[in-house]
Image 1 (cartoon, rainbow, N blue to C red):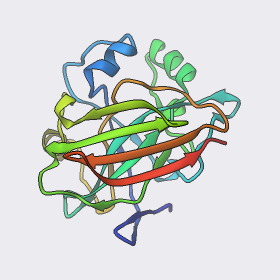
Image 2: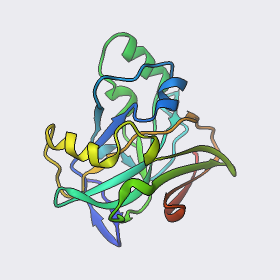
Image 3: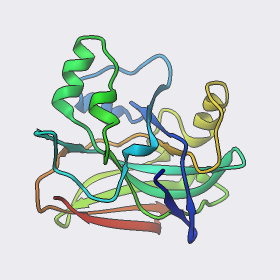
Image 4: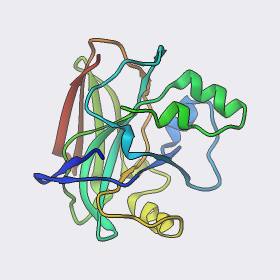
Length: 204
């Protein structure tokens, strides 16, 4: 089982819970519509990787930078930056056929995480930024979410059991795109403008 670092200790998620379509601007850039209910999909523990892949099984990957929350005692204990990697061509094909997304979202190496740090008491001031080769590509905060963290936790409590170490990926703001080999990625999560945690990768 793969682990993530939280405040210097290893935590092993039983699952990664992903919230889809949580930013209106991202919904619009994908040519989609605002859903009636919160969109939830899962990535397995085996999806956790440490290498930023530009392709997988011959298909180009796309990046999605996200605020990520680590669970302990059923609550948000930690905050980190995450990359949700997507086989976009496969995803569109699966969606058009009405089939599940796992082949495009849950492959090995499809989830990358910074270390996690203790979460602030008030999560409403969290924001995320992603720079690629020094250029800002994604930026967004809780104030732009259709489902902020408090609502996410409320709805997940009715859907599943949150185990210690589970990770919630809260959705991606606008600006997603293709991963180019050799590109430098720098992602960070801020709280009220102050950087809480950052991480960087070189796309392989």
